[in-house]
Amino acid sequence: MLENASPPQTTDNWPPYDIAKLGEDTYRIVLAVAGFAEDELTITHQPNMLVIEGATTENDEVQYLHHGLALRSFARRFELADHVTIVGAKLENGLLVIDLKKEIPEEMKPRRIEINVETDKKAASKRIENAAA
Image (tube, rainbow, N blue to C red; front, side):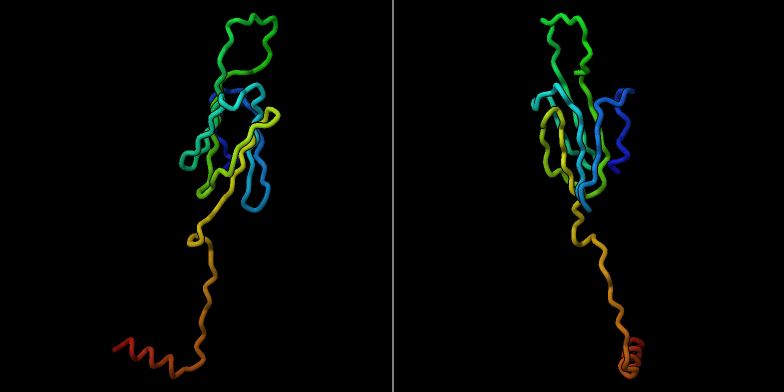
């Protein structure tokens, strides 16, 4: 479901991101958030949804001769499958790294059911007679 990231709020697909499968049940989302500080980023885990938001404050004291850095606010949403949890998040070298893990509860995991074969026909017929009684 991670691969079905919901469409971005803006049409230019910003900020860019990667989704990687690290193991059988471990995943990583990496967003390019250069220019954002930790306190300008918010990560929210809602039921089956991961929301990452970034907000910067404009510096009105600076007069730009060329303004090419895209330091605008954003909200990026990722739809998560059931039982996916956020393991951790870190900001390093302008990249926001979020690690995820899928943890299916034991009672929901598939289990093999053994088929018992009766070799004693008398025991089988007694059970049938008792069930009819």
